[in-house]
Image (cartoon, rainbow, N blue to C red):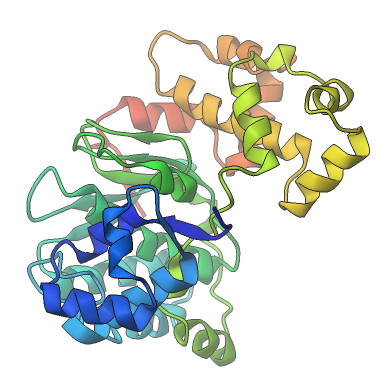
Length: 339
C-alpha cells in the first residue's frame, strides 16, 4: 500500500451516478484500470483520483459527480475560488462560496453559523438523509476553500451526519478525523471560529496556481495505514493516556532504539508527541459529546494535571473553548449565532 492513496471504494462512489461509457473513458484518462473496481482492497494514487475527478467533470460538465439536481459545471470551483478571494475576511469568503453552491447545485443548502468560539457548516440536501459521499464531497470543497482563504489548515473538531454509517469510512476518517458521528440530528462540519475573522491575503499568483490543480488538490494527502505512526497510534489507543509508555519503552516494544523510532516517525512527518496529542484530541471530542462526563473527569482521563490544563490544551489544539463545543453538540443548534 502506497502513501497518498485512496480506496477503490471511493472510486466506485465517484462513478455511482455516471453512465457506464463516460465512467470507462474517465478511468482510462486517469490511468485507473477498470478491473480494480472489483477488488475491494485496491487503492489508487491520490493523483490518479484527482485526474479521475477532472476527467469526470469534463465528461459530464459537472464537478460534483452528477449527485445534485443541477450540475456544477466544469470551471465552477475556479470561479468560486476567485470570487471568494476578493472578500475581506475568511468568513465572508466561505459564506459567498456556500451561496454560490446553493444557487448552482439546487437543493444543496450549506449555511455557516457560529456559537461563541465554534463554527459549523450545516448541510441540507435534496433527499434526507443525504448520501455520505455527497456530504463529504461538499465538505471537502468548503473546507478546502476555508483553509486556502485562511492560508493554513483549519482543524476539524467533528463531522456529524444524519444518515447511518456507510460500510466504508476509513478514508473519510483520514480526511475529517476520527470524530465522525452518524445518526445525528444534523449534518454539519464543526471547526474553530477563530479563522473566520482573518483577512484574506491571497495574491493572483496564489489563485492561479491553486485553480490550475482543481479539483484534485482538494484531496487529503493520505498516509500509509501500515506506517509506524499508525501502528504506534493503534497500540496506544487501547491504553489510558496516564499509562502511555515513554519513548524508551515504546521503542523497545517495537524492537528498535529511541533514535530509530524518532527517525522513522519523522520520516512520516510525525513525532511521538504528535501521535499522542492526536489521540488525546480524538478522545476529548468523543467524551465532550457524551452526557454525564464532567470537564474534570475528561481532564483526568486524558492525563492532564487539572481541568484548566485541559482547557488550555483544547484551545491550543482547536482554537475553541471545550465548553462552547460541548454546548453546541449537546444542543439543537437553533441558538447558534449567525456570523
